[in-house]
Length: 422
Image 1 (cartoon, one colour):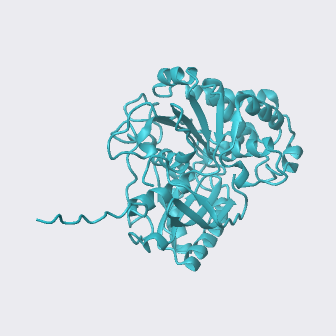
Image 2 (tube, rainbow, N blue to C red):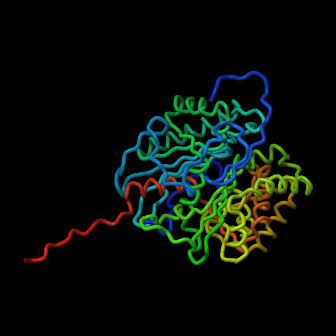
Image 3 (tube, rainbow, N blue to C red):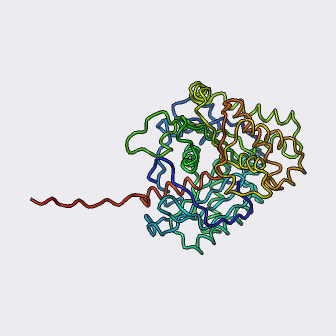
């Protein structure tokens, strides 16, 4: 779980296992439209709502490899910038957080040399108004100015800077990114839900237990939640060894901790309110693609959950009894179903002041954590896996891995053949 203005140095990460390594101003208040989940191509889809929600996500059953950022919507990049010694940066502007990672490739992964995270709540009120609010945009721009200064100070040239659900949904999302470009010099691209799901897998790949049949990965965000079934039972095609190539199906639910807490309340959450949140998310899971096959895989007991979000890292921090959140201790932690049950009971039983006082929750997440617990509980009731692994990594790490893989920084040099004597 990220912390406000977090700066981390010297944190190592590995490449994925199996790989080498908006509109004008509108008068009045818009009526909120209830959005449905977005599913993997070839699967049933909900009725069309907003135009971009109705567009096909892709033409293949599994997400494809990441395209290079278009220079018109993302920072110019230098291919193979600096080789093994060059710096790479990934920025994720989400509904709740603004996060930056700057890393340097290493032989077996990369080393994080600088990081930044701030809760900006960019998507505050978007669910009801359809627009990014002025105060939220100002908070985000302030955080992005800090990110821009870090990139300049470090001399980073190989970057990918992305925006997710809040900017995807807001009528003024693209207008806001134009403002960001003018005021900070950063050019962000709005990525699709499919890309977001794939990047989460790329970032967490090394935490999937290779002795199992795969994992059900979930990323509970501020405005949307992605679920991805990574199936290790299917043989990988030759030259397609990345974990993201093992995605069997995925779905993006139009619900996150910010949007759910805004609808149901985040401070005073009674048991009835909590169950109402769980029920809302459970309804969205009914049409998950290939659900029957996933049911069978979970029942066999050879599938584990992999969670990447502030919700699961919070539960892990509480589970470990940390006096202060420590990413190094949380990332990769295994929790049994019983341990998750106990932590859910403990956290959901806290009142608002107790959540503020907890060192692994704090004031900035105290009104959001129960919404995240409700989303997690809905997933666990639908697919009761016996084990959950916690990931304090995700989209940013996925971006870094894909850029470095694309640049061939982990590619072994070919040994020249020696001519045999005649």
